[in-house]
Length: 228
Ligand SMILES: Cc1cc2nc3c(=O)[nH]c(=O)nc-3n(C[C@H](O)[C@H](O)[C@H](O)COP(=O)(O)O)c2cc1C
Image (cartoon, rainbow, N blue to C red; front, side):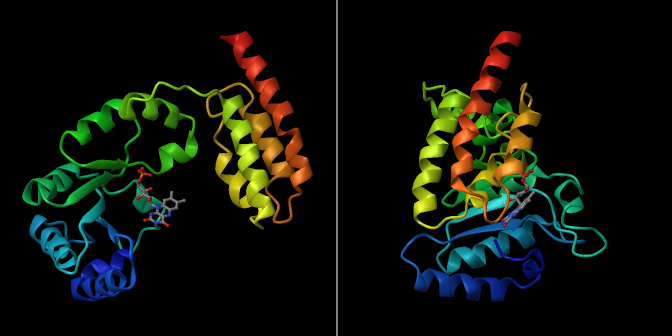
């Protein structure tokens, strides 16, 4: 992703992408908004994308909402102005050889399926962050997997991963802060969040404390089973 204000300078962006393509062995992808300020035009976006294609980029993640560069915070600009999925579909139609991944305001399985009929992929941001367990449903419904790991099984794997990473020098909070939503919408969500914030969110959190995770998880599992 490049700063949204760079959409004003397609040549500079193409120059940057060109340098990255020449310096990397892996494919270089680009993520961009569909426009900025008063500019939300198919031709502008398409020419911008063609410039990047010209220097070797063939995968584009398009956040279907224009960037407002002044007078609005980046956070506000995640919800305003309105999404324009049609612009992304049109880009795919015009450039069937490019991989076009749509992003912005997508959370439900049906929405994902619909977008996949017109685009090559879907990127989901906030919804997964708030409710990471919804990835299980996405794995089942979109990728056709059969496994449905419980939160307890996920927490066990997470602990194994955490232990390995801590030995490599990774900070516990860098991993655990992204699991805050594990019990989203479930009994025990508050306990989980409190446990994390009391034990796992400090810069110098101690791995020994993570050993109590399974107690919280098992209590939550029991409470949710009783209520269902
Ligand atoms: C806390 C937060 C951090 C983000 N950081 C990045 C980032 O570093 N790079 C990026 O391309 N987009 C970033 N985004 C934008 C998301 O990738 C995505 O484009 C945006 O949230 C819209 O998708 P969504 O409606 O599925 O959340 C961030 C969004 C949020 C909420």
